[in-house]
Amino acid sequence: MAASTYQVIALAIYFVAMIAIGLWANSKNNSLDDYVLGGRQLSPTVAALSAGASDMSGWLLMGLPGAVYLSGLSQAWLAVGLTIGAWCNWKFVAPRLRSYTEVAGDAVTVPVFLSNRLHDTKRVLRIVSGVVILVFFTFYVSSGMVSGGLFFKSSFGQEYHTGMLLLAGITVFYTFFGGFMGASYTDMVQGLLMLAALIAVPVVTIIDLGGVGPVVESISQVRPDALSIFAGTTFAGIISSLAWGLGYFGQPHIIVRFMALRTPADAKSGRRIGISWMVLTVFGALSGAFMGIAYFARHPEASLTNPETAESVFLDLSQILFHPFIAGLILAAVLAAIMSTLSSQLIVCSSALVEDLYGIFSSKKLSAGKSLWLGRAGVAIVALVAGALAWNPNSSILQLVAFAWAGFGSAFGPTVLLSLYWRKLTTQGALASMITGAVVAFAWGQSPMKSVLYEMVPGFASALLVAIVVSLMTYKKNDAIDEEFDRAVELAKVK
Image (cartoon, rainbow, N blue to C red; front, side, top):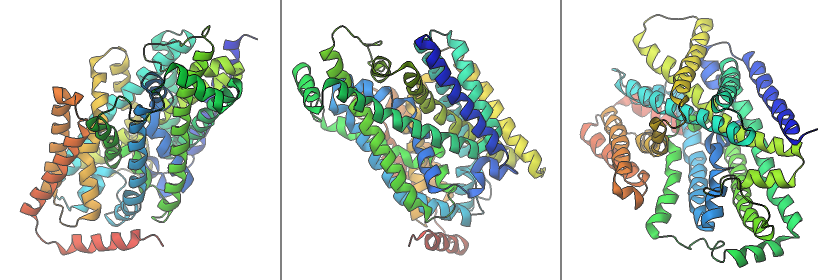
């Protein structure tokens, strides 16, 4: 049997498993609240692994190993920043967001929570935040579809549009029927698949090369500075990399997992599971890059498929060292990274379209069944728009994705943190903060200063400052808000 046949079989098994989970989750959806938040019945394990998988995307298995392969351990500062940011997100945001969303009108989306938390009777905050989420996540979804198309083109020689439609079709199918619960459980399985692949490739490579000693020796001979975390770095560069961690506080597709936990106390277990997964996978990705340096130094007859970016180093090692079926499962792990992010963003887009926008402009009260199908329609609409944007793999719109992490982090991060920890935050302060963060991050990202300092730093700092100043200028004591704040704090206390 040809090697490619084994790989196709492995991918087919993976696709069937994802569809089966989506169809199983369909039976759990009885209303729109179930569809967009899973009825707040997510266990810590599912929440942690799904948050990690939907966060990392293809960057973990391709982008990070490629960067470290070319530039050495100095590229790991970004991974350090993300790990610290994820830990802080679980520690400080998760329990309070879970409790406060329940206290604030049982909110099931981030825009609804912010609107209810600040008693925004005009719902301006809900509209603005819903539109921001819908627009930028549509670009994000489009990027994931492009990644899928390019993956099938480079790995199997498939035509770009065929690969894009296959990945998008399967992801949309299980998300359409499974909703948030389907996306979360498929993300969990995908997270475990990513973990297995990221551990297996470095371990097998070490065994093939004769142990850790020969690996380090080979790396030292060809790339003496590769193992130095400070080689080629600057202070501003390190700060920029660490600042990526600030983005976690404002990523709707990640923090919505906190809202779906069964209780605020589950955040403690979720943090331990999620950060353990993250440390292991990041270590695996870094190790895979170094294994690649050592392996290709010892085997000059072998070469990278993509030497310009080295993003293929992880996949190249798997193709060389594993049976084609196992190599196919590792290819599935890359798809898992892409699809887990895609499904989570589709659900957030659907909720922004239906719950945050349609719910405001329509006075018509829908039955549970009709609202459920409206949520599914939201997934289909966003998928169609994103697919149209992704039809051209070189579309300039996709350049906005690089800004999206900093844009979301700057626009929502300070507002989310202050809404949970500062009772004096006002609607005016939140709106001014969101607009300031997005504008500063975008403007900085388009300026020459981008090469000096990542736009997250000025974007987040300016948004935080504006939120505090404007809130102090517009604050009026509200006993109802204070009472809800105190209840949320008490409910969030983890014994």
